Amino acid sequence: MAKTENHEPFIHISKRDVLPWYKSMGIRAIAILAALIVCAIVTMVLTGDNPISIYAAIFKGAFGSSRKTWVTLQSMSILLLISLALTPAFKMRFWNIGGEGQVLIGGLAAAACMICLGGKLPNAVLIPIMIVASIAAGAFWAFIPAFLKAKWNTNETLSTLMMNYIGIQIVAYFTVYWEVPKGSGKIGIINQNGNEGWLPQIAGSKYLLAIIVAVIVTIGMYIYLNYSKHGYELSVVGESEQTARYVGIKVPKVIIRTMLLSGAICGLVGLLLVAGINHTITTTITDGQGFTAVMVSWMAKFNPIYMIFASFLIVFLNRGASEISTAFGLNHSFSDILTGIILFFIIGCEFFITYRISFRKKNGKEEKAS
Image (tube, rainbow, N blue to C red; front, side, top):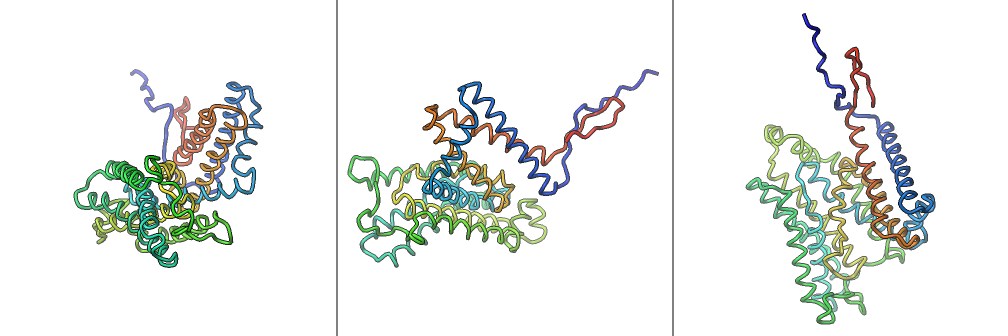
């Protein structure tokens, strides 16, 4: 009889058991080191510049002065807050891609209060109204796709994405409606003379408020997801809606409740951007962080603590990218290339954390590779 051939595949991929935290962090550290080496090679080949000086410029762009350090921490806080807002929905397997629009609508509500009520009410009354209005507006903007999903099982990815563009156009309309001066196409600084509706500075710093809010929300979200009944219910819904219904969880109620929370936090971010940082409203006030937050949440595996580091990494790279362009006279696209390479390695290493690769030996036995 002819010898039976071995049809086992040469490469076998299997899911790992959960790795200890130190091993997963080690894999991530190796990925970052590999990314820096690749970036150094690309830099030398394409520009001839010393890669060490490039990395020094990245650090200088984020922490080169006291002001740059505060701006980096503030930007990190805003990105972290949006990531935290999206996380409950993601953990429930509700793909909320609408953070951008929810932040914009929350910011628009704050701007409307500042413009329409500024000078008519004292700040002690106006600011609480703005807080309630921004949170309610963001929650309402998230409620619409949540209701559609809960009621008719619509595709939440499309509906939340669509809501972003509707939100952008609404902000664009009111930007023209409130523009100062007329014909300028922008609102400018709102209530610049009297500072009506401007959020107070903490300890004389205009950067601390967003940082403090981010710390509070991070702690609260960690407790909510891991130790509350609501956090348990959304986890069960994320694992299996059928199981959730079997154990008596009302899935539509959980969907709507979770999205209201996500939208409320996004609305709070809009308030911070408009009344605490920029003191104006534009269609680009979020600077795309509503979409970047999706990546941050996924990179952190929906863990609020890990999101601190993921947010820091993204902001650090973005701040450093601008410094590279200025210091070396390079096209800004080059710094984006370096950022893309680093993110590619960081995201790609998650595969090796989740899966094990084995190679088949000639004798038919498997040899573990990673």
